[in-house]
Length: 422
Ligand SMILES: Cc1ncc(COP(=O)(O)O)c(C=O)c1O
Image (cartoon, rainbow, N blue to C red; front, side, top):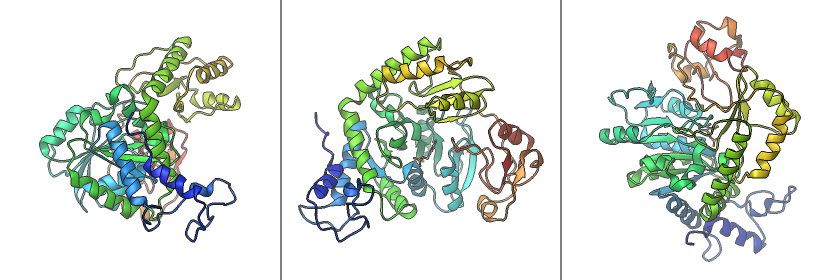
């Protein structure tokens, strides 16, 4: 099978194996106190035949794009946060107008704030607004609960207007390697798609990619790269980048089969618990355990039995089974759940946040940089938010800085573990 080479990871391995006398960063010199530093190499000037970071990285990025049918790809060692920053920088000029789904991760709101963007919040599941002067549309392709946004119509809408669609697919990186990527945003020809490899694939924390879809203009990714340089470190972590390379080769080799096996085991697990196995509009790999009003208790009871889930809210525990989880893994979980006497169901419903938009009292950056005090939720009505208010994870703010807390938003916040806002 072609494409299984890993140019960037191999570059690091060859360099480490040669055991050079290192007169460069990082300060651990390849043999630090942790014992795993030998592959942690900095971006050095190219040395012919020995070390050429840029060239190896470019080859690995091309292989990653080819693996999923994208036009191009960039690796990020700064997570999807950095990739989204780059994407937004590329598409939204200073003080430019943008159409953005309200339920987005705060990293998106933060970069829009820095660009002083004029944001028109919208709900992509209801009728699409006039494009007007918007220069880009930004949406979340997959929520924390595994809800998938239909993207085809949205992409056509952007294409007709001649503006790019940025899709935050941080939670759905694995979908590019499952059933020929039919559930992945690239299948809907989305222009810029951001995937966190580290969330669902075997890659190190911080490992993310941004793909340019097949119809995306060639120069756009050059601008994304510029944006990632503006916002990111000048010393990206080589190990994180190499882990993307390795994960991609591994997925390309056996990802489809491994994911099929995981899904089979997960289906058997759901069946054993009397849950449904419907997957319409959902990521079938995301496991959500619902126990009404008992989310925290369920999370704690699992943790007391050495099972640590991703997050919880009032009613639900979100589980992200690692890549490669099979029968043994789910049998262990089933056994533990058998020791917990709480009613459980798999909620396949779509949880739409219908909280109305709050009034905007101040520009976001003014509120965020201004003075603040912490206020209990029951005293916050009418106050202007100085911080992003909402549970983390998932990091989707209920109130943005500068917005006025109304009854509806405070009701929504009371359903989370938050008791105060700034
Ligand atoms: C929907 C969504 N987008 C973006 C991000 C940021 O991703 P990263 O942690 O890879 O920077 C997150 C993080 O949880 C997220 O949930």
